[in-house]
Image 1: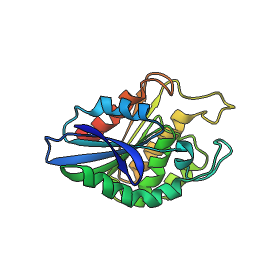
Image 2: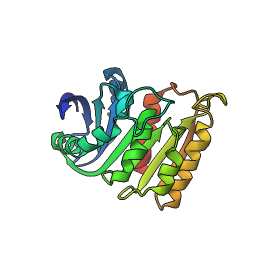
Image 3: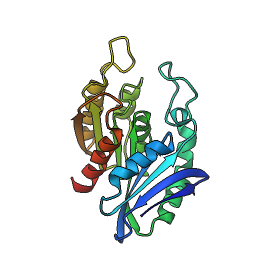
Image 4: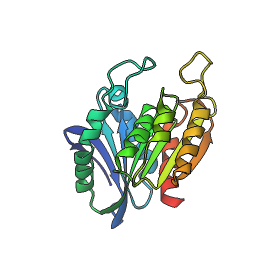
Length: 217
């Protein structure tokens, strides 16, 4: 079953296995309806899943935890994080099954937000899919922080995503692998997957792989 609704006044698309009494909730923030529908089209057959895609205006700003010259706009992740308890409560409320696990997954800057938000203790797992692990000061943030309640963390990147040495995206693969190793050292079950293609190659399929890993690993 899939349907459109509003969660905390924001547009949201939900895909739910209405045959399952126990559900794993996957929350993702999207920049438009096209992205949300593409992801739901990939995951709607997965059993025991409720997938909630919330549309955000000023998506880039909401995903940024601190300002950087590498990205334009204000850093508004803190404001979104303050809404997270209410967002989760409403998302769980619209589900028909009993939600036992909660996962936050993100693509691009959404992956950055997932890694940052994971330190708040609200999710059982977090995923950075083609995530902005190049973001300045992210590695020490992960190294110095704690991830209460996070049992699993998924990381992936495309084999053609690294930029030139002058690009802020330079060494994004290496940074992603480093952050994955740091989180594994904290006792979290992690995985790193290298996908084929650049940053824009089959994002919905890459996100489905993350969901499947959480379900079946």
